[in-house]
Image 1 (cartoon, rainbow, N blue to C red):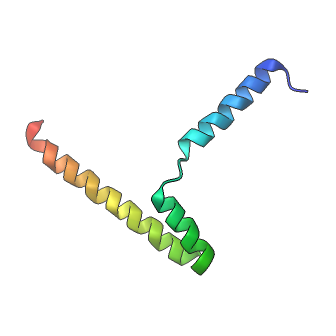
Image 2 (cartoon, rainbow, N blue to C red):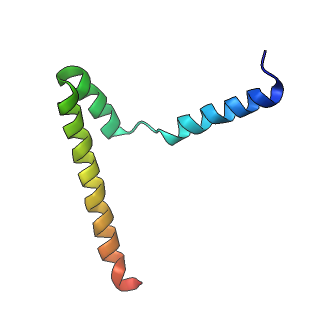
Length: 68
């Protein structure tokens, strides 16, 4: 049996892991494509999501740059 303090530490670690890995639409599409077609198809979905995020990041950066 775990002591109360170790139980709380373990509980907080599990909670942190659950909050740090949110499942979004790209992750769902990646899992679905990976189960249907394999690793490279899932990797291409994830790569497309990452490229989209990078483009949004650059647009925000360059859009806010004149204000800084």
